[in-house]
Image (cartoon, rainbow, N blue to C red; front, side, top):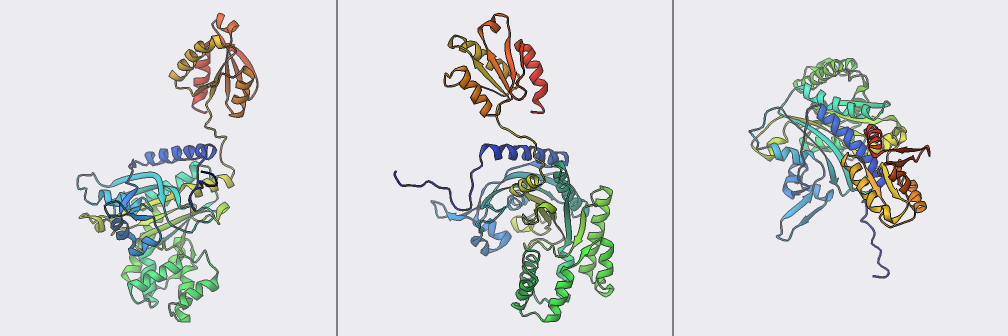
Length: 440
């Protein structure tokens, strides 16, 4: 096989032990928060029928995902998010108690152009609430996202909230003619914070919008402030429109609930947030970390009351939130919030001579039976080499099985960080290290 380079595909990455340790630490904390909120964990299939994926995002989605024909000629695709699978799973389930609160943490695939903080294979956490039309459900998923950020010690973040119902009806008042044009305009607005104002205006010129229409849209999407300022910004005659009024009232209700949950301090109404995906139809939101503005949103979501009806007989309201693990890792790193994390075993059991190997195996077994993480020599190396290995692996404790100690019913326990040694019985070691295991 000379000359062959077995590289990984473009946009993919291997996850090595150090990073995987961080991911496991993150995953455990996120799952703990989702359990605290009463979400049940599930795992939708990674491979869907292509028509299932197209039903959510249209036939053009084929340009943005991994799709293929199987050996029987069926069109299949790798999932690009978790919402599709969750929605499909419950769309014909009439036996589930309502509301239905589901969560997942798994990997996705998108055929995007690889760039900073974005891979073609990535991981997301996701929480969805089905069968509740109330703003309490919207507040619940936003509060969940906030608690996840707070769990990692992130403080300099902002939750930007908007309402698709309000924005869409205002755009219609500005002269947007039909649904196709509306969705195109929303996709342009979704780029607002990623491109210059000149590029933003140029995009609208391509839609043949007048200068007055562009001015109104720029003015609308530039609004960012408290809920109290919304009614002062939108003319009173427009607030009488049913769609605009309903969207505004949903925002008022949401902020009231978030205040009761004490989750409103980092929340702001921001009409540049539109979530370019077409199925959103109510409250929408995105979270940004001040230390990672180039990363993009660290979580986002919103209400999608009509999506369930596409996949089955249940036309039920829904709302949800999802966040990227890779982006969260970058935010935690930039804020220097990662603790010392290692996947190395806690204990290494070493022997000074071959005739004590059997005794060392018994000690390994007993330590593992108590739930401690233990490794031992698999290469018949001398004591110096065993110590060097334990040091290089950042193992916390070194247990030395020596003839003199064994005769006294004891072994040596060496703390690899402080270099202090104790001569203890195995029972004493188990008691001492079991107390440290939870913080390890």
